[in-house]
Image (cartoon, rainbow over all chains, first blue to last red; front, side, top):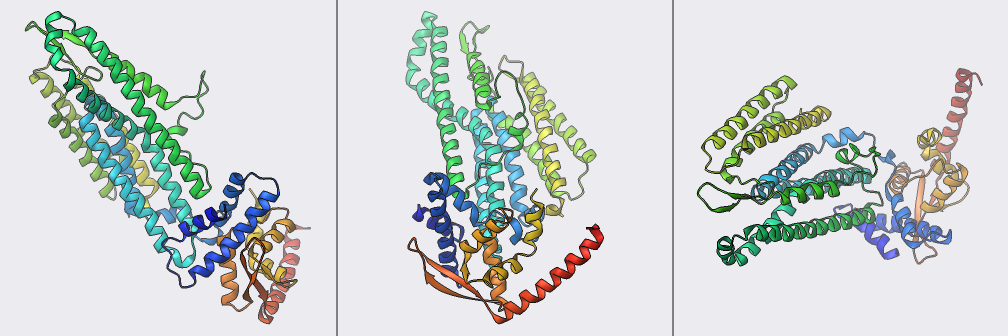
Length: 375
Length: 108
């Protein structure tokens, strides 16, 4: 464990270039190792002794004379980017229900932006405050990064699960497609689709489980690195107090919801006299390019909200009305001229618009909270 | 909320100097003394301790030297200087005056 303590201290001083760095580290390591041995002598198990020891590196904030918001203010663009990451992540999750490819693209953009912002937050806090020995700032940033990670991971999981499932099923479909013609002739397409749906469900659960395992592993790593529990986040807290028969497990809810959607994969006998598989998820098939248009609308509104310094709620409302009209127009246009026989495109675009409307409000809320950041 | 701890934190330098006026000491030992004396109300992180020591050294109130310790680690000991003793005296006098004044306000 001594080695682990040394590694932990080295990790915190990774970007530090002070002249007496070795001496500082040696002093701190010595103190922490003494504390660790005292804890072990007191009967703590080694793991708990380690966690409790590293908390003493920099948990109390008296080394800084500013508050959290001021510290956050210095990390302006990265925090704004984090909010955008969240907006993109949830848009991506929603889009995945309609088109896994589009959802994947937006989710990847969100993940890349998150990685950039997180790295910036971490590195900048290390460089900027090294002279003041400000471990507290780094702790705050690690917490911020993890908070956003936790908020977004569920949304990323949704997008990635749909995409990977879609990809796997696409391969399976290609491998088995030769038989479809036979099935069509024998009028056994229904049993094929049911089998296809079951396999989809299994792949879906497997991918989601792997992503959940990765998430849990990252949380354990976070605790080892920082000595802190993973911070609570807004979206989870929203349902934290629910005391129904069981505590809401978002993954379970999502799993049930999605599996129902998958089972709704429909087989339709169209007028031209042949069978048609009418979609993979929730019965939707949407041409990809058209979905990019509402995303651009939304991105435009988001940029205006972030860039404009004195954005009011009324201004944002007007922009969203324009956004909504755009969605409705596209939805109506698409439905009217669509060669497909589905009739939920219009409703779906309206729902999407309303959700994004909520996201915009969230962004404005963050902006008000961190108005120093943007002014 | 640990109000006593927060109030004590404003006087960390004086507390450290008063402990060093008894014996030379090193970071962890100092921290333990503070924890024990305040019944756990004052516990400093390594970051805080470092800042305090750095400030005291800069003002020439303490000197430091290395010494071998148990657990195969070297310890950095601190000792109070003449200037530090003088500073501690002035802080003690200021505290007595502050206490006297506060008692009047708080009608103790």
